[in-house]
Length: 135
Image (cartoon, rainbow, N blue to C red; front, side, top):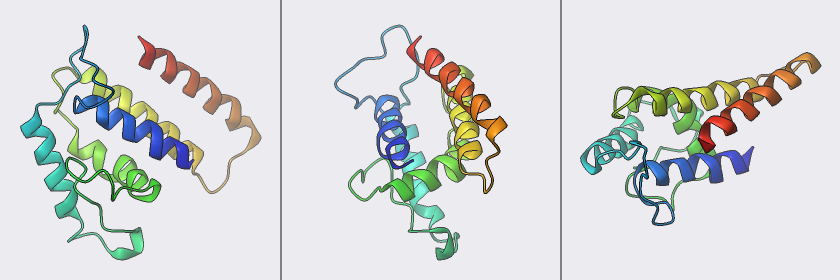
């Protein structure tokens, strides 16, 4: 699970902010305006003032501080903060909805119990998500 947060989520954030391997958007419209991304980062950092420490480390400003983010903080951000902070921020909802799809998959993966019959469901959901990502 660490790799999901430290690679996938982190790289998606870099992609949205226009900082992933010097790639441009191509024919997509997924880059967030720098001011929007700064506001998301500031809101992420400010959320630490109202979140009990029992939930984990204080969330860093994801727009500025990539070194302070760990698998734990990326996990918390992706599962709890990002769905709210990213809503209506993209020029088209397709990118937000795609992100929410991976959030749902992550929730399935971290349930307290994972019955065998859910494994194929998760496998298919991940395969579908990757196919959509690669389009």
